[in-house]
Image (cartoon, rainbow, N blue to C red; front, side, top):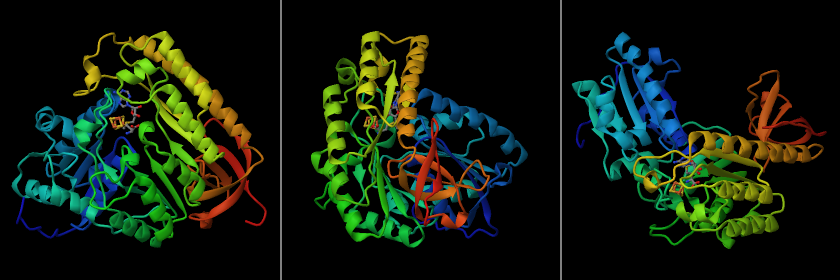
Length: 453
Ligand code: SAM
Ligand code: SF4
């Protein structure tokens, strides 16, 4: 790729972006938009008007991958109507399938691996000039990594800004494809993170969401000696950001030092996403999670004694190979004991490379569906009860945007991460206002601005 040089675009080129999956993919897509904006691309909301369509993909569950294939199938007609259109597939499915994607979808032009997004401007130039089709999946892409994460210009800023602090994962949970498609753990130096956050704040961000597959192992492999708790303290001391959140934490790596941060750092929101995956020790062991249900419960108690108001959310799955009714009941017991504020619950699906695909005693789809329904019913009642406890309280709400429902409502979040809608003007966007909670629903709260706001 070296020495190609970039050809200046004669007219602005339209870029349509569609992102599947997690917040890390959202962040990568933002970075890609920023990179391509430097090359003359402007965002096009309509794929039929775009010169380049970029699909950022997710393969964490089978269903996610199927959604990608279905969308790619629908793109054929866009290419038929406009042969000069360039279709690019990035993200985890791209990394997983590589050139097989070019074979399966002959109108896809470029497949870019998870470690190659920084090379996208050069790759696009090559494809557009030569008409060749490329699958680029380097093991390491030093130049690309610097392009993507070494630059700290706050290109587009919302009230809540995501900031990647680490990439990849070394944990190898037996159900998970992430270590295979995202590669080994790699942390960003603290000075780059601090610079990026301060720039985002200067452009209007009030909250940062620090991202990583397991932020608790932040710092491993860096020249500087610091852990994730140190990074939080640095951000609080050296930037003007009003709120800090992070996701995701692995329970085995959640240290007392980090738990103490919830008591000590005023900017750190009292909210943690701490996936537990299962409540049976037998299943947890087969998942290679390296903690027991009791250890998980103990960490939740420690979090609540350091910070009584903390909101706890988690991921859980049903139907891991060999999961019995008794194992499933242990999962429900853990949910009843911890009383999560919210849960993201999934049916287990086999994933390529992940060890559990070869495990015996697969659970039938019917049993998975029944267990998921029961689990979600239990959690829905806990979430609603907890939301009802909020009624009458006054909460500081960071106003993010106009509510999707329209009708003059604004929307924001409490420190515990509950969504609150309330009547208010769009001039409040970016402010932290006191809201009295008046009604509770399954997924959100309603409120009114407190007197004096
Ligand atoms: N690194 C994070 C963690 O450890 O929690 C997130 C990993 S993954 C992107 C998000 C969630 O997807 C996981 O927490 C897990 O519940 C779920 N998941 C991962 N692999 C799965 C599989 N094979 N089948 C069903 N759910 C899966
Ligand atoms: Fe996957 Fe486990 Fe790594 Fe999370 S910690 S990304 S679930 S391997």
